[in-house]
Length: 317
Ligand code: ADE
Figure 1 (tube, rainbow, N blue to C red):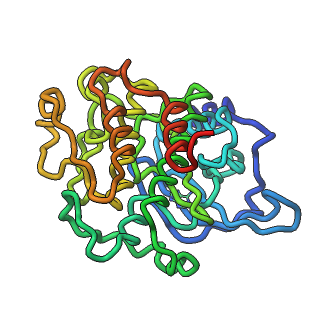
Figure 2 (figure 1 turned 180 degrees about the vertical axis):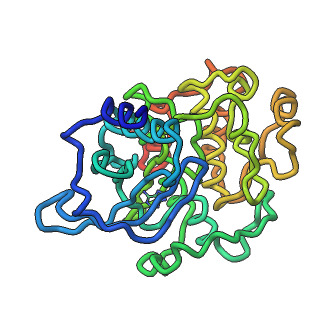
Figure 3 (figure 1 turned 30 degrees about the horizontal axis):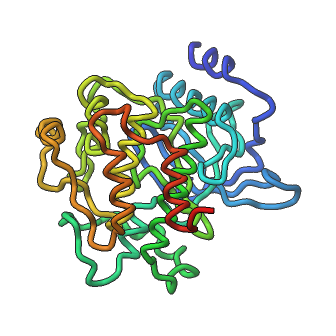
């Protein structure tokens, strides 16, 4: 049938991992696109070793289109290759059962929820009133990190790491289209890793206007030209980075909480933006403002963003 034809057109022996060496554990993520499980893989990185991994798969009753989207994600991940600041592919199972992608596991989960867990008590919230309901999954994993607080410099280092991952993605001609703190994962030693860069996006409408459980809508990370003309580029990723950096500097604040999705384009076109977060250094806010410039050609590249952040953190040399 069509499904097996699609699967065999993507088949690649180099990457295939034996199913019998994979143990699927508990569910750690659920999206419009499928499921993510924690799992254990034998001999995936080195011989006679068991590695904790994340396993992406589709529902049992997935359509051929959903399976093909997962296979497209697989081929983008293969093409992009490895970098410290992106979630990389470890292997896949395409033969003899459900299609599964095996990727690096990030023990602290997504950056947004992590930042909110680590928010200092008494921190002034820049516009965010909602309560998290889905925030317990990683708490038991958090023991090593529990005593370490998050300083402003730690936050700026998260900005640098995500910008470095994006610089790499762009060097591989990959546009993310949905860069946000929810799509950055935090691994051991507080390493930021960009996730979900290989997703086939439904750019026609529904996803970007779909409300998440707490009322946040993905349009709030979109540049005006992406919002209005569906024009996605490296420059629209830079705009999304400005919103991500703002999320980081506010310990996981929600952008424009009082603005409805339908009002956003006019709001931005009239020159309105978000305020400087309480603890955000002036130089860093200036960089964020440069990234949310209305005219896309005036926004910096990720190489320039990394340079500015490195200069702030380490001084110029
Ligand atoms: N949630 C979704 N993908 C994940 C991953 N690779 N590691 C940890 N949590 C995840």
